[in-house]
Length: 398
Image (tube, rainbow, N blue to C red; front, side, top):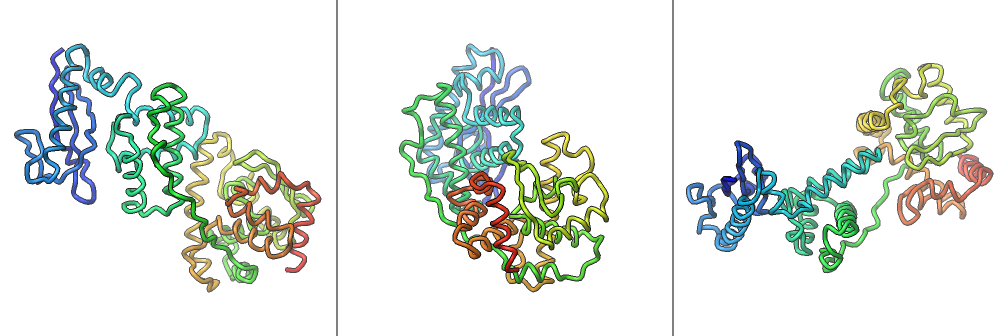
């Protein structure tokens, strides 16, 4: 097969710093495929006629050696390949590039209907592309490359240490899967010579009971979006730190005789908990005012039939509700109102629980997603009577 192999500067993918990636373009039968060199330079350093980096660039010699090497590999592969894609596959290896394997990994998450996980891994892959280039080969994924990704997350994306650690943890999971499938050997694991960033205990924003009361006392149009989002936030707090996703899915039938019973979307665990009068009044008010399938008018009947559609709807509403909460916090004269989000209700309940009794520290730890991780861990550790005793202790001294 006769295929053209040409190094190009893809200015259409120029970064914010003005650098653009150098790719190898493979064209056969009028179809083109591209392989990244993982090299980024400013257009002024590219000689388009010679298809190489100008000598004015301090790394011109090293970069041009890498470009020539990859170009020769492509030309050699084109001798036996039938298509541009076949050339690309041959150069990157039969197992494909890191990108290709990563995309297959994400596709499997889609098959298992793990919407949020798929979204997180897609974000990680985008950052991997931005930091190291697309179509990254397994040979290029070294401990130095991981350090570069870490620096990119912290310095370019301004990610905090914990977010950066999570991104690298996802890359490590994909690498471990590649080792398991024998795409690469255990000895080729780039994490063997790389030290993961340490986890930093974050500052958890929480509101005091007095601040919650100020939110509750705001004079709002009872049919407004602000009233809806305020009441959803308060119910999440009074109901033991309910996730917003679960608040959206609550139905009037979940509340009976001052008790709330629902199934957690994230874990499928069933929660049974006593509600204080303030929370019961909220559920009664919205049951009468809304009269729909769901307690709050975030979702419509049928939205919960398709899990992917449901999660997308909740994600959109969560963003809108968070904007409302910032306005509500300003009206209630709460300090740093821009930090108030729906998730703060969980932290606020946990903080109050910790301060109200010795046995409640585990609740605070769980709601804060720290060592005990999540609320369901705490719920699984207590029977119904213990949970009711817990809420009684908290709300008795309201």
